[in-house]
Length: 530
Image (cartoon, rainbow, N blue to C red; front, top):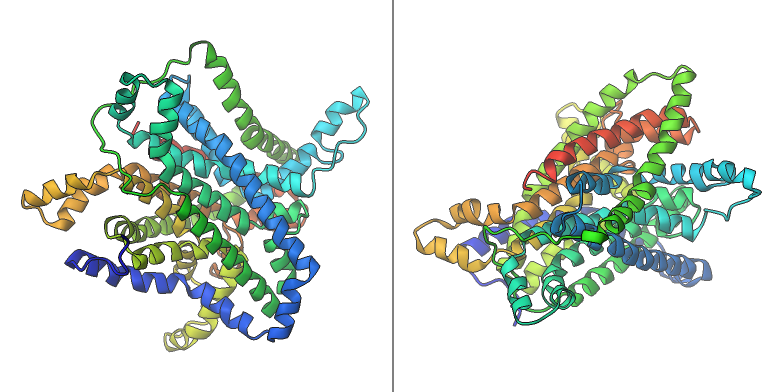
């Protein structure tokens, strides 16, 4: 039976004292939206929400979320299994390659996709000698679905990969000794134990799809984020009203994700043993073809387009010197946000998993609301906070502008904290609580037990979450445009500035640098525990 409140212990009271203020701070954008939406007359609000155009926007958004979530799971789960549990050749390299698409900004990827598959694109040029004069239009649902799927499947890939690395092989071996086949063991044992990791990854994909703006804007597919953006310059109240509906849909996704999880205490006792890798044998080439096809569509093709634009720009006088300062600023802001999110996720996760109650569950799930909001809406909420609530403080200290690195990092944390919570929660669910109880009986204090026993065991999930926040914050655009200190140009804002003016050659260099730096960091972040 789930309690209304966590059982009263010093640890639970301390966790509540930490998480409640944090949860309230994370709700600031939603509160701002509610205040703005409340200013819309009820009659006008009902008329706007029930008209055919708004209902089409809701239908398109749900269709895109469902299609992308299923596609990302179909790619991420087998890719994670191949790189963790099989003798796939160059599996460490494939791990990095399959994760790198996560750092490509959606608008850059969509532009590259249009450059490759659009009218008069590269593929059209290659097929022209064969008599193909016109390709099917890449714009609309199919273009948005393809772009977002190829960018978001790493959420499932990383989360499931962390889950697989924590499974005890003894459970699967016991299943095989009882006469179950490999497929039956995977379906009844492995897949069931991976459900928290799969749910966390698919949940991030669904929320990412709801909140993405770049790909749907380039592909001209009118979903919530594009409709909100178009409304911002016309009527901020109606834009806030649409955002509140978006929050409601996100809450529905969170409830559905929670209901789909298997009931009970889901943990797997870890051991020092390493799972024996499955020998692919004659399936080695099929596995290589599968991961290569993903890499071709998600990484090689867009990088090829960007490389062409870069070479073309260098031939016309563009230089690489302008990338250095934005690169330093991007790394600084993203690293601060990732570290903060990794630390702040821990109390939410521990409270929800070790002290389950309606309150702890609500606090943890409430942290996801900021991630469901479009970045431009989160940025506008903090503009309001900085200009209004912090105005007196800024005046007291003689500050002329509320825009600061601290406020930028705070907005990043509000936006991307779920990326740290999901994998960390999956990691903690795999830690046997009896190990912690045994350490307590040996005289260790609860904080020491957490630092010396629990945290090392859930480390793969925590590292995966921190990596997700860092890589996503590196490419975040709307929040950076609205909150970064004046003149604080990052790689993302430099790319947007150039691409919005159709200077694709100028956008190619920072885009390629962003991908390269992120790929180098993944070598150490993802495979440090192999």
